[in-house]
Image (cartoon, rainbow, N blue to C red):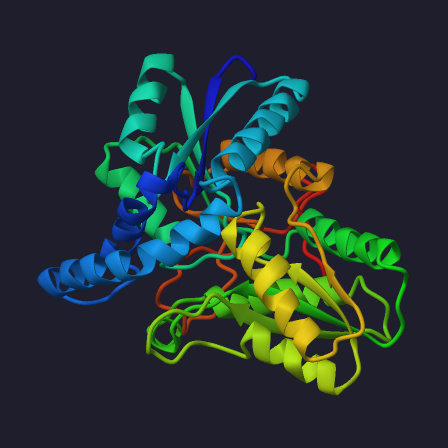
Length: 357
């Protein structure tokens, strides 16, 4: 009912808001058993060691962005845009943010929502592709914090508006970059250790589904490659690695267009890794054109999609069971980490989520 007061909780990882927050942020990150899958005492020891050893270099990188991560301001802008979108559609809605590893934490957001006293609470992760290390971890943290849920979105990797927004940004970046020929698009996502995927995490499969759908909306003569960035530690990670894909592109004399396919906001992985570190790799290896596509941010199609997902969750008869872009499970039965156990409904024009071929 339009008379309902709707609280929408946007989930993201978070980032340090200043130099003093860098080490505790890293400690929170590496203390999560979804990230380091070791017994508690070992995990806490490793979290202390890793956060201490990486703090100096991380502070230097965050200093390039003013001392802290831009992720919270970016997410706040998206939250406000979604609130405007839902209000325009006739809903009484307020957006809230719950970050996983830095402020605002879930427990603080739970209290703010209780004070606002909504009739329904919809949980909306800003991770289009589901992973046990992101969406599942954030939702578990929300439950442990006593958070309420009347509707839960688990993933939307091939929602039509997500795909079209990505494709449009890639094409616009190409035009602004001088329309080079002999193009190879690198769709770069945050990597994960290979053992996480082998344990049943559907993230890589969903990233590849996003890439396949985006590829269908790009020129037929362009090459498109999925690659993975941000590797840390000695474990074997899924690949190919983004820096290796850049070097391979240089050898093939390709004009490279690099798009953050699994990030919806600008932050350290885009502004430092893609814009500085990987650009340097490209220059060192003689890449003739290196074009970086912006994250989705406030793209109107993306904000519309978030509104569609909220409305779909509000109308979902099986709420609060986790809901994908089509309602039901997108993942094959081999992915034990997928929480969605129901069949997809037929997409309808009213919810405008769609499925791209």
